[in-house]
Image (tube, rainbow, N blue to C red; front, side, top):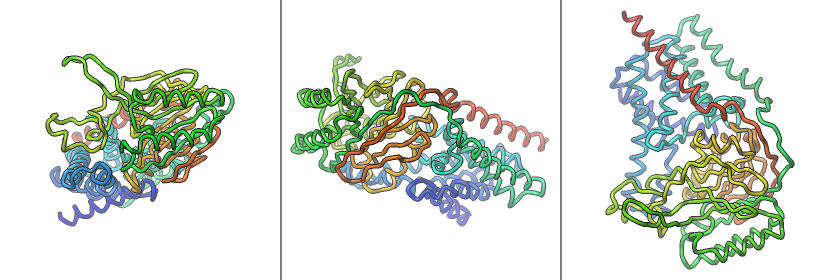
Length: 498
């Protein structure tokens, strides 16, 4: 049993290499196949332990950067940083433990209904569930590994769940080729080939269409070191850096700054924002700026100040977008108030942020209707769909400086690229020190700024209209299919036992 647990941990650790920056995409097939094989003949208890070990391997290697964010930049004590990292890994591993329990209890012991139906569908369902349950954490979902393969052509149809399901189908096919009979192997061979043929046939399909003239855009990357960003003495220097960089790209129809680019509340920067507006007007430019803001609101406890992580559209129209999906233990603290002083990760002089209200109307700037997300909000694909349907381009502003030079920034860019593929729209991605980029509707990076340098990035994008199948239906067709397939395999097991 010890050897099986170690093998599971190694297979799980290998899965992390399927994602950026290594992008060994084939491990997203081989690694799950190894777990399927390790689950053969396991009791529910042993299957849960094997699953937990696999998840621990995946998330300890794939999300190690949380330690950098919490300890190095958040200045949390070492013990707190390790506790939070271990807690995240343990919680994510519990999903795989649950999956092991389910497959051991519900699915046939072997055969096509186990390897090609039940296992892929059960994993696909659990992966989707962990992406939303208790605010969700969809990081390292299998489908994200396919941004640079033919399979990405299927993302506009079913999003990441469909891609994950097909990868798991192929993983099950490998196990079937190893353990199945001649007829089962023939079915498995088809399961390995058909998804690639379908993806190749669909890779040229235009689900959306150009709308209007191309628009000149620019991204401003200030590259302010994270450990200096919120020091009061650096405030004016930081604002001046951004204004000087902004002047270099005046004339671009739309300019985008990163998340919380200005190191102060918008309420305290009204003169500065007026200066920016004065620069923009004569040049015919408009600006999206990541900024924090405060407002007074009435609550059950009376009037209190609420803080928002926001994007301000500064131009012919003034508009706001407030971040909806906040980062636990970074932007809000689900703990009693008396422990927040020592648990706090971020060196910000404000209390918890407030969740923004659901927003179905895109932000208008630069003549574009923009579906805006802040930081890892773009990992929540379906919550963006109402705004996406009325948009003609995407914008993500982020500050991945919290993760240093780790793999997190590359993983996050890969997630952003999938959003562009699913919607077949251009994406503008502004990051404090990288990776700032312009992504085309096929998920390819058409322009990219150098990392860790103050720079500007100019490009031209084509607005697009229309909806992909995924924009119309979201995840539900795929998730319902997963449920039906698991039910089919479970019923078949009961009948065989009867």
